[in-house]
Each structure stands twice: as structure tokens, then as C-alpha cells.
Image (cartoon, rainbow, N blue to C red; front, side):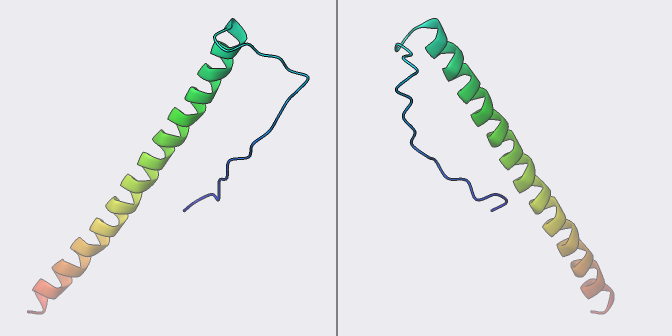
Length: 68
């Protein structure tokens, strides 16, 4: 895991956003954009790890074939 991410429940009594209002929609879109960005970063990290592991595996396999 790259970052230790935890959800934190907060209550904002001074902020009365009504469900389904324009402010609520804007807030939801911001959250979804952040989730999509995190998802993209996760995919890129996993792909990078696989490519690194497979390139090292290929190198080891080539060396083992040379000395077999």
C-alpha cells in the first residue's frame, strides 16, 4: 500500500446542504472525481509493479537458459 488512507466521519452543523440540491450535486461530483483519480493512480501503480516484476523475471529466465 502506498498511502495509509482512512475515512473520517465529520459533522458540519453550520453547513445545511439539502440532499439533491445544486450544492449537493457539486459536492458529489468533486468526491467522484477524487475517487476516479485514486482509481487511476491505483491502476497505474499495479501495472507498473507488474511490468517491473515481469521484466526482472524475463531477465532471470534468459540467464538460466544461457547456463542450462
